Length: 215
Image 1: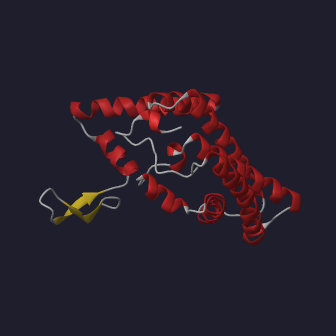
Image 2: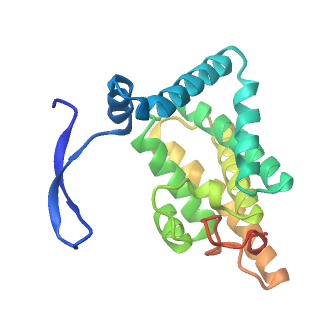
């Protein structure tokens, strides 16, 4: 009862009733303790995932391969996957810089990330997700190739600008984030003027959307 609570959730009849709820970790722990054969498939899956996580701790490259396999199963092209992974590497280098220069993980990371995104795309992360019809999904997993490229360019530019000035703390890194995003924005505007096509789009990989609608 410490970890399980009751919240009012909408039922099939449209009314809200108090319903027992818990976080995913608590629910999985409860399943582990259920003495029923019906819970056995999930217990086996948990054991498999736990073993895979142990393998990744020993050999981090395995996590990259599993990510690649997962994206392939979801219909991503080889080109998209390579761009997604390259963008993640660029992102990791930026967040590593922030960690070493007095920027706190969590809220401050999110603020800087949104500044960069807002600068290059002229739309906030929240509104970009809304445009694509996303809720809890990762925005980057639903970006087009072009959106991934400009996100990576903005974050690469931000890190290099921050490094050149040894930006420390939120104030200085906010300034670097705006400048880095602005560089990517100029490139985006130039591309759009040549192609007559917007980079930021409503397209996503949500179920039901044809795969070939996303470039």
